[in-house]
Length: 99
Image 1 (cartoon, rainbow, N blue to C red):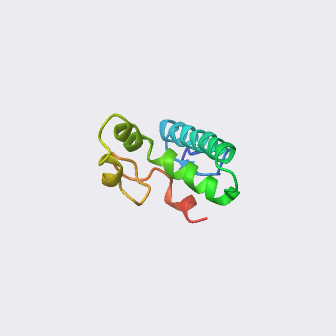
Image 2: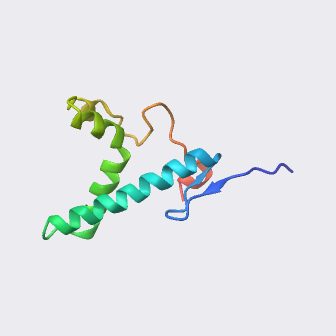
Image 3: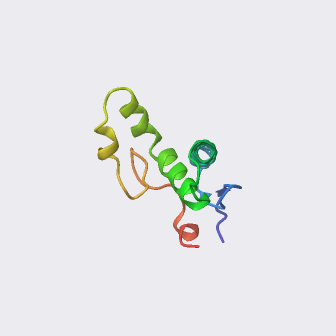
């Protein structure tokens, strides 16, 4: 029987096959939580679920959002819709992604 090392994110339980991807995912979730808090503080009447979805969307698209803020607004439209990172595949391991 083989032993497979995986890294689990405490925030959402996602599992990764390397530490770098796990830490990147954790930072993205922390950014999403902070964006959500900002939105809820400044937009009166927004429901919690909508705030969280917006925060997660912006955090996942942070690279494209940064490019858009630096003068390339079309970068937001070029971003992939499936949640994959700009450079490649989604890093969540398949056996956990469907739970």
